[in-house]
Amino acid sequence: MPNMDISLKEMLAIDGALGAAVVDYGSGMALGTLGGSKQLDLQIAAAANTEVVKAKLRAIEALQLKEGIEDILITLSTQYHLLRPMTGRSGNGLFLYLALDRGRANLAMARHRLRAIEARLEV
Image (cartoon, rainbow, N blue to C red; front, side, top):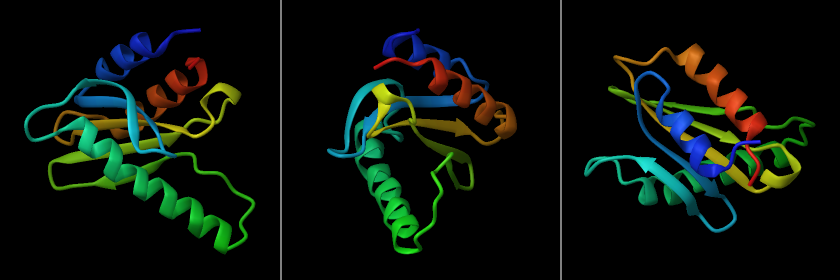
């Protein structure tokens, strides 16, 4: 099973990747990051996207849905942001965050690769 550093490198190797993080949505803290830029501060993005994940979890609970979140897609004019809550025993309370350049990324392939990385990651 890959560790976090290897998984972050695999995430950043996805075509069009701009930045990647593993985030604790209880605290909003990024446990690990790779990539990013002055325009994409991964620590700030981790904290802000924690609120997105929490809001969706509250909505699911309020609607009494017997569903889990597979991933959340945020589409910006030049970027895609993928949030994927981890479902494995060791990843409970964590999510993967991947920012992609919309002009270079293949969204379907990025989602597929992120799902595979999440399945193998042991935290």
